Image (cartoon, rainbow, N blue to C red; front, side, top):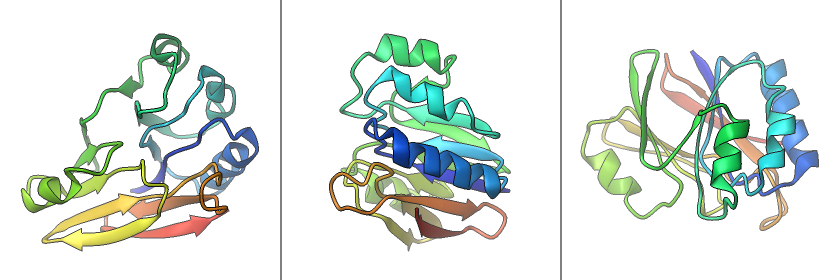
Amino acid sequence: MIIGIIADTHDNMTTLRKAVDYLNAKKVQHVIHAGDFTSPFTSRVLKDLQAEFTGIFGNNDGDRLLLQKRFNGRLFNQPCLLELHTRKIVVMHEHHIIDALAESDRYDLVVYGHTHEPEIRKIKNTLIINPGEVCGWLYGKSTLAIADLSEMTAVIVEL
């Protein structure tokens, strides 16, 4: 199963559109958003995803009630636990306990955002992915991640 992972979209509708178009072209089956949509109007672009969707709230998400409504209940507080393709996944926004989650050996994949810096690494048997920032505001590069849950591999893609 191929999934897309995005985070820190921060209302940049231009780069968010590029991310959606890329994920649709790659025919990912599920997209995880690791927080910081910022405003509910991001749903106008994300509704065009041709994949299942799970997102979490970040520290910069303003109107959480309207965000939740616009995303039809597919946004959660962290930690968000889900299972895809028999893989146990935990999704966070902040990075403070990422290593501890991976070291617990309870999860196959730990996803996070917040730092805006892309990262793919492993602790024990747990793959850790930060897709970086879709918005491109902080570091000037709009990135996302593609993960293969069958192989437990991932790549960072610059849009």
